[in-house]
Image (tube, rainbow, N blue to C red; front, side, top):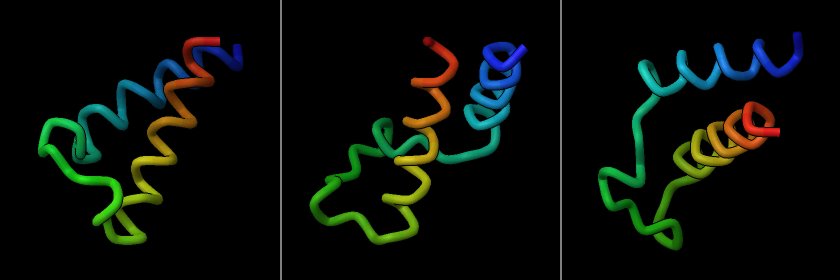
Length: 50
């Protein structure tokens, strides 16, 4: 159940949140809110794959 929840959340994030890797965002120059979104997406993706 937990894995399916994170897979659904990952699909929702893919549709709604911006993809900073496609925008070629330099993480060293990213703003705090961009880093927060990037970290959140990474966390959800990692949980969906485990």
